[in-house]
Amino acid sequence: MKLVIVVVQDTDSTKFLDALVENNFRSTKLSSSGGFLKSGNTTLMIGTDDDRVDELLEVIKNNCQNRKKFVSPLSPMGGNVDSYIPYPVEVEVGGATVFVLPVEAFHQF
Image (cartoon, rainbow, N blue to C red; front, side):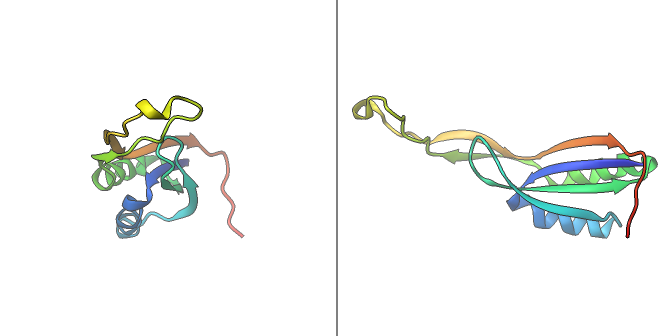
């Protein structure tokens, strides 16, 4: 058995959760926040049999895609604000960060 931990952007989470249910995967949803863009994330913990891990990874790949987004950088703290021009910067967002961990035992009460 494996524990798969998946971190996705909130904008991808609804579509991804629907795909999990369609493919008969059960999950526990945790709210989290990102570091770089301070955007909302969803962390999902999914327990699955070893032989279904590849199927799960395919569901993740098909529903959590990278895309480009323009964001305005934060103003510098303590620096010279007069010379700071906040041009939007293109960054890559979305996708998924996935951890696959072995599980010794699983109990549900």
